Amino acid sequence: MAHQAIINVDMPKDIINRNIYGHFAEHLGRCIYEGIWVGEDSPISNTKGIRNDVLAALKQLQIPVLRWPGGCFADEYHWKDGIGPRDERKRMVNTNWGGVIENNHFGTHEFMLLCELLECEPYICGNVGSGTVQEMSEWVEYMTFDGESPMADWRRDNGRAEPWKLKYFGVGNENWGCGGNMRPEYYADLYRQYQTYVRNYGDNKVYKIAGGANTDDYNWTEVLMSNAGAYMDGLSLHYYTVPGDFFLGKGSALGFPEDEWFMTMKKALYMDELITKHSAIMDKYDPEKRVGLIIDEWGTWYDVEPGTNPGFLYQQNTIRDALVAGLHLNIFHHHADRVQMTNIAQTVNVLQAMILTEGQDMLLTPTYHVFNMFKVHQDAELLPVASSFGAYEYEGHRLPQVTVSASRNSAGAIHISLCNIDHQQKADLKLELRGMDALHSAVVSGSIITADRMDAHNTFEHPNAVQPAPFTGVAVEQGALAVQLPPMSVVTISVQP
Ligand code: AHR
Image (cartoon, rainbow, N blue to C red):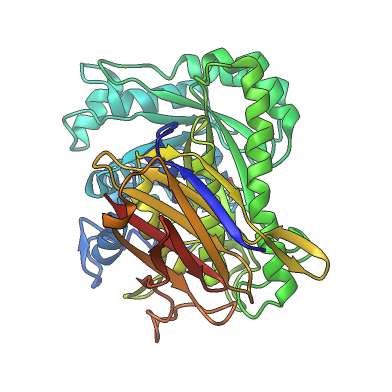
């Protein structure tokens, strides 16, 4: 079947919040330590302990917001252990992730420095599961209070005179699981209590995010919105794409069979249904859409690479991950009215990472490249698309073969992002840009990332095996864009009037 879509250029909708392109870095495996923090004495080139190669690569992505310190780690993290002279900081066991020693060398000051260097907003997740109201309250005071107070004075003693700006604060993480195994009614009450003491000091206004549901736990969203909706600015949702069974075998990152490719695409596309259904519940309590849906953990989760620590969640990243990233970002764009932030898990060396490191080597993953190609959509106007795409058929099962989203930026440039998830068939598309005059005189260009193997990936020996290339499969024909998408491809097209 022919693939066709109409992009309604003259009917712009919501703004695609740049925070949809957010990231998440936890004290887990080699994400923070080795991946980001190497320490000031490291032979690896660094800025005050933060490795420069990773910093430069992340800066290129224009990361808008970074979530830290967890994850499950957040509900066991005691921030006071991570400030002051580093060699005097308390050592603890990272019970969630491999039982390794956490030396607390990367704490609040180091995280805020990282955000300053990346020019991104910090998003800090507080400890509800094993922390106190006082501890959470004092953390916010330490970071954001400008006057004389025990916490602000302590911050000054530790070398930071000015308070930091802190907009995004999460009140706990996965409180239905590692964050305390709570029932929604109980957590909703705790949320109301804890958030009361997350104060706004001076002109610092905190956007408070309540710990949200796991996948399709719609009751959690219902109870949180009903009992605590008035006290939150955002409500989170976590969903990971796991091709197999989470406990019995998730599937390998490399060398997987065709049916796992198909299943991965199917499970990634499920994000659309999850957002639709959680949003419908939120609409009931918040028809004005004041409360943002914050998908602060998403991405692929496979079995760890053979021979690596099972608690470190280190996995390779292939063209399949590029497709998963593209599918999610297209879905998030379409829900820009409710989805105000998302944070892919996790930035370096963990799960669906942007970057992998080995000693002083670093590589950019296919997922990184998709984020780099799609960043043109940040803060742009979403353009509604009506599509009629054919199916990707596999052993009697069907999925939409192509997904698309489009936006227009403040300079008037239109960007169209496309994913062809079929692992064998190309797709020929006709894209009509309704409401746009003079397409024939527009400058049309594009980028593509694709591969000829389902598990094509970058290695430290061949770091550029999978990388974007200029896209030549687009032309203006009879007043529309004619596009040829190879199998397993992600494309971004730019139309400059
Ligand atoms: O991202 C890894 C873990 O997944 C996080 O710590 C936790 O919140 C989730 O279960």
